[in-house]
Amino acid sequence: MPAAGVVMIIAVVAIVAAAVVYLVSTIVALRRTTAGLDEAITGVVGIIEKSAPVEEVVNTINANLDAGVDLLEGLLVKKAGLSDAVGLIDGLYPGAAAQGLRNIPESKDVKAPRISEVYTRGTLTLARLGREAPIAAASPNGPALRNPVYGSKASAALYPEGRPGRVPNLPRSPVIGADSPVQYDPDEEVGGPRKRMPARQGS
Amino acid sequence: MTLEWIGDVVLLVVVLPVVIYLLHGVLTAANSIVPSVNRIAAAAQRGSADLDAVPLLLHTQEQVIATVGVVADYGGSLDVILDDDQGA
Figure: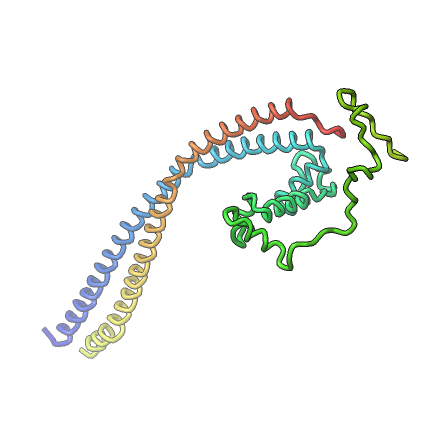
């Protein structure tokens, strides 16, 4: 056999060998891909099966919640009136008045009274008096101003510049004694009906 | 004889490198798919595990229905107890 033929055979064998090596490696990689896809498909099927009833259940929940919201909004408007209802909702959820009530479109145009401001002031007053108002218990600034156990010390803190003195314009107390303007006569009134005091001028 | 040598040279210098280059490309592409598929499989498994709590929605549904029923009962009672707004 000529040398050229031998070289050609060697070249062809080398080409076939290279093809075999690479193709076998490719087959192995594709088998791993197939196994991974099988695992992925199993997971996806699980997702599909588990999420199938979600839409129906969520729609049912939303329908019931919608009915509850409609009921409460309607009851609130019926009892408190549209204006106060919007004010109360805006007090609980600031800015909610702009959205209005779902079943009452004209509620968006209602100017909400500031009901929450009154509630807040009253609650803050309770907190300052140390009456364990909920706002004091949950205050982010710490506990209530007044410690009920050491009340005197806490109350002194309410007047850092000293307790205010007597107000000079207070009305005078009723005068009693011999010089009082209205005299009490025991001979007339003991055992008898109480004498009517003279009516004030202009009342 | 000369043509046979030329053929040998072509096989060794041209055909063999081209075959190796093409097969190497196919193998690289096939290997690059495997990690992606594995990540997809892992994500699908985690997603499926996350949905294990979905049956609890049925309990939530029952609770919502019961709660709305109680709210409706209270609302009916309040409607009787409280006077309506005078402007209504």
